[in-house]
Length: 404
Ligand SMILES: Cc1cc2nc3c(=O)[nH]c(=O)nc-3n(C[C@H](O)[C@H](O)[C@H](O)COP(=O)(O)OP(=O)(O)OC[C@H]3O[C@@H](n4cnc5c(N)ncnc54)[C@H](O)[C@@H]3O)c2cc1C
Image (cartoon, rainbow, N blue to C red; front, side, top):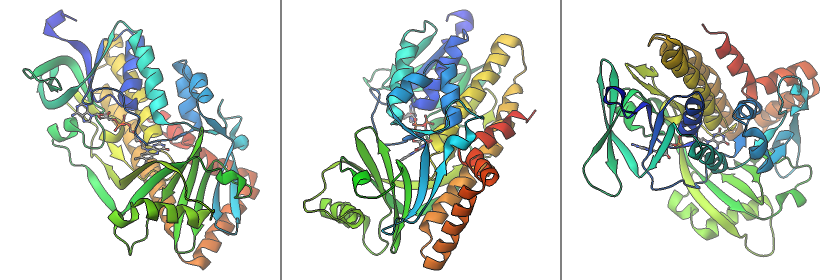
C-alpha cells in the first residue's frame, strides 16, 4: 500500500490465533493488514484445547467452524469428579441448544485453528503474514503508528508504517511494554505439568467425559481429550521440586496414581507452565491497541483464554472497520475496550480463578459440599442453563453486546 508512505492500514504484532483471526476479518473487509510473527514458522505448542460454543458460532462467520469441528472432538458434556470414587457432577450442554449452533465444547488443538486461518489468509490479496519478524519498537505520530521489526535472517532493522498497530503478541507483549502499560495481577505459585498419552482413560474410568476436572486425595488433575490422545494436567505436589517432578519416572508415577497399570505410560509430549492472572488497565493508547493474551491472561481452568482472545479479535475488527471504512472516529476503539475489558476482568479472569480455587480445594468436607452444590445445579434446568451460559462464555458476550 503506497498511499502516504504506509505499508498497510493495520500492522499486527504477533501471529498467534488472535492475530490471525483479526487479520482474516480485516482482509475480508477489504482492509490491508500485515502480520509480523517473531517465530520462523507456525508452531504446534501444547496450548489451548477447548473451544466454547460462541467461539464456534463466530468461526462459522469466517466459514471455518465446520472444518475445525471435523478436526476435533465434539464433547456434549463435561464434569467435575471425585477420584477414585467416580462421584461426579456432569454438565450437559444440550440445555443451551436454543442459544447456539454448537451446544458442545470442541476439543481441538489451537494450532489447528491457526493452520486454517493461515491457509485462508494465503488467499487474501490484502493480507501479508511475515514470519521471523519480531516487533521490537513502537512509535506513534498523529496520523500513523510505526512498528520497529527485527528480522530473523538479520540485516537492517525494518519498520512497518500503518494507520493502526495491534499488539496481539501474547503474554510478554512488546507492544504492551512499549505503551508502558502495567500488566496488573499475580502469578500463581504452582507450576502445572501437561503430559499427553494415548492411554485410553475412558476404558478405565467409568462415565468419564472428554473434559473432566478431578479431585484426588491431597491434589487434583484434569483429563482433557483431543483426537488420538488425552492431555493430563498434573498439579504437582508442593513438597517436591518441580525439576524432580518433571523426571519421566515422576510423570509416570503421577499417571499411575490416576489409573495403575502394569507397564509404564507412554508419554508423548510434556510441558510445564506457570499460570498468571493479569490484565492491562486500558486496551488502547493512541493508534495502538491490544488483544488476546497481550491484554489479559488467566488460569487455563475452564478453557477461556484463547476463546476470549478470539472474541476480542471479532470486536476489534468491527471497531477498526468502522473507523477505516465507515468514518467512525478514533474513539471507536474505546468502545472496543469498554466492551471487552470488563468481560475479561469480571467474567473470564474471575471465573478462571474460581475454577482453579475449586479444584485446589483439599478439605474433603468442603469438596463434598461443592460437589453437592454442582450436582444440585445439574438437576435444576434453569440453574443449569444459567451456569452453562456463563461457563460457555455466552453471558459475557451478551453483556459486551449491550455496552454502548
Ligand atoms: C497449557 C495451556 C492450556 C490452555 N488451554 C486453553 C483452552 O483450553 N482454552 C482457551 O481458550 N485457552 C487456553 N489456553 C490459553 C491460550 O493458549 C492463549 O490464551 C492463546 O494462545 C492466546 O492467543 P494469542 O494469539 O493472544 O497469543 P499467543 O498464542 O501467545 O500468540 C502470540 C504470538 O506472538 C508472537 N510474538 C511474541 N512476541 C512477539 C514480538 N515481539 N513480535 C512478533 N511476534 C511476537 C509469539 O511467537 C506468538 O506466536 C491455554 C494455555 C496454556 C498454556
